[in-house]
View 1 (cartoon, one colour):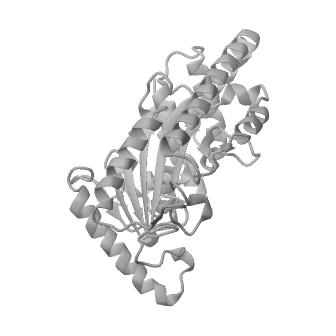
View 2 (view 1 turned 45 degrees about the vertical axis):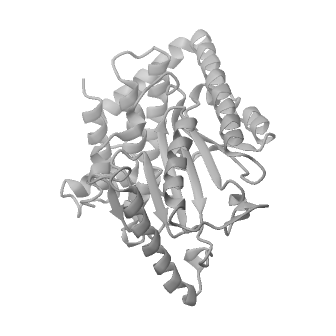
Length: 359
C-alpha cells in the first residue's frame, strides 16, 4: 500500500480536460503478446508442471522490461508490484485505474503518470497497456507500439503469418489489439437512446457496453466503454480509425442530446444538478452507487453550463476516487486500517468528496 500511495494522491489522466473530454473521458490500447518458446496457457489454470516455466517467463520478461525500458519509459518513480500478493481492495484499485485486467498478472510495471503499464503472466505472457485522457486513441496506439518495438528485439513473440500474434484466446488472435474509449453519455441515457446506438455499433464489430466500474445495482451506468470486438483480419490502424469514428459520432450524438435536454428540460436539469451538488457537498455518509448517480448528474449540469462554480475535472476524478477500493486506500494511507467497515467507508467517502468540492 505504501508503494501505491502515489496512485491514491495522483488525480492522473482522468483529471485532464480538452475539447472532447466532455464526453470521452479516456482512451486505452492494449497489446497482448506471448513467447514462442514457452507454454502460454492461462496461468490461472496452468497445470503444476507449467508453473515453474511460468515463473521463468515472468523473470525473463521482467528482466527485459528493466533492460529495455528503464529509464526511458519506466523511471525511478515508476512502480513494480506483484498484484497476486495484494489484498483484494488494493488489487481492485489497480483494476479501477485501468492498470490491470482479470485474471490478475504476476508482475506489473506502471509509470508514475499511469500512461503506460506492462502486465506479466495472466491470460497472456505479456500485456502492454497505454492510457490517455480524452479521445486520443492514435497517441495511445503509438505509445504501445513504441514499447512493443523495444521489447520484440529481445523477446521471441509467438506469431503466425496466417493468424498474426498467437494467444490462448481466439479473441486475441491477429493484431492482438484491444482498444477502447470510456464515454460519459448521461443525455443519451436520459432520452432513452442508448439501446438503438448499441445495436448500430454492434453491427460493425464494435461494442458499446456499460462499464462495470460505473454501473449501479439497478443496472444504470454512469459511463460506457466503446471497444473493438475482433482483432483477427483487421490492421491496427483500421481498427483504431473505425473506433475513433464511432467515438466521434458518440461525442456528436451526446452533445446534440444535451442541447435538446437543456432546451426542453433546462430547469429540471439544473435542479437535479444542484440537488446533487448539495448532497455531495454536505452529506456525512455516501454509498458508492448513490455517489455515482449524483456525480453523473452534477457532471452533466456542469458541462451543460447550468452549474458554474465546480470544475468538471474534479467531478471526473471523483468518479474514480470515490470507489470503495480508493476510499479504503485513503483510509489505510491515513492510518485507518482497522476502521474500513462499511459505515466508515461511507463516512470517509463523504469526507473526501466534501473536501474536493469545498467552496
